[in-house]
Length: 64
Image 1 (cartoon, rainbow, N blue to C red):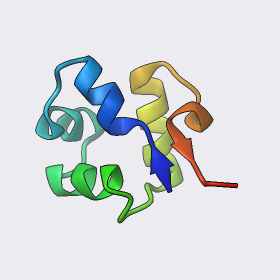
Image 2 (image 1 turned 90 degrees about the vertical axis):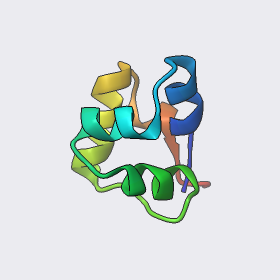
Image 3 (image 1 turned 30 degrees about the vertical axis):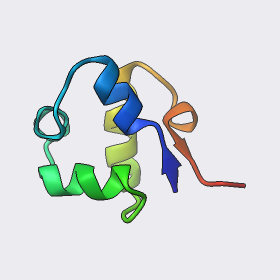
């Protein structure tokens, strides 16, 4: 799944560890999501959307 997490994180000068802490996941999870190797759970996607004040669809794209 494509996503904009890396761009959104960089715009705020956050490290992967900063974002991981804000979302209560590991830095490795953020790395895997950013690289498209892991799709976030729906609750995690909602947390990210709320954190960035965006819709889930504007952060994550399933490619359809």
